[in-house]
Image 1 (cartoon, rainbow, N blue to C red):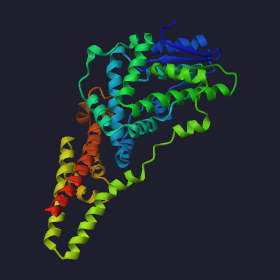
Image 2: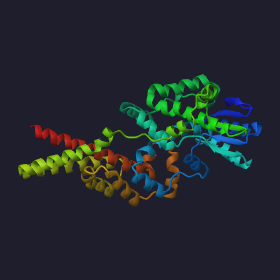
Image 3: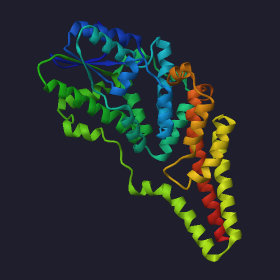
Length: 389
């Protein structure tokens, strides 16, 4: 029927492993629905990814503005980079990432079958993975995404589906590369998907076909076979966003407190010259670095000016960010077209971060914030060094 890997949990529960970028997986999904005749088709999708796939929704102006305001630009950029890596392989197969999941949903709906979404929310997964990664691991993954790929060593999709040992070894490479991210992207999701499948199984005698990424198949099989999958309360725990520690929450306030302490010190001394020097160094460093970040993002001149003007103020208020203001100005002055918004998350090449207007808004927001942060620390270090001399 197909070479797609299958695990039969019982005579009424089957798990189908697919590649999210493979045309053969699309055919396998349709064939399995017809042959297995399930009552429920469970797919490795969360509500947001399901909505994006079924409505062909990518991004709109309100959504882009919300991303800027809520400071989610780096997260959306990371998601876009990951999607681009999938797309490079998917283009060779003639399919877009998630095509087989969309086929599963559409085929099930045409046959009036129940569709169950069994994956964890993508934002929760990304945030938990990012939280678990160490600083140098974050740098490595961003560098590898921006670097050149060695196409000669990239296995074919069909080879991955046929050779589960090869697929497992590639998944283990991610765990070696970043143990924290591997734990979230592989182990947690294996357990979560298995728990969701088991919960559906416990509801009645309906036949269930679960469509998941082939890389999760062995992990799901192990959890279901050993009955080590999470119960309802454990599933809820896996859906919780990571909490920031008190120390991490206090970091953004360290520089404002340091600056207020310096102001109070110079005022108490009545030294107007040092006070002027303080504000000059602070303003110059913040403005220069924020403007540089916006310039690297190829922001509009007024967006660059906005970043420079906002940074000295927003760096003293952790609830604000210079990039939000610069990104808003960029959005208004170089408003993305409907085509820009539709095409951005396709991200055919990394140059779209600059050539696509939606991508540039995100770049302006993220790099202006990064520049403003760097400027604040440089200014603080310079002032602290000046006190010691």
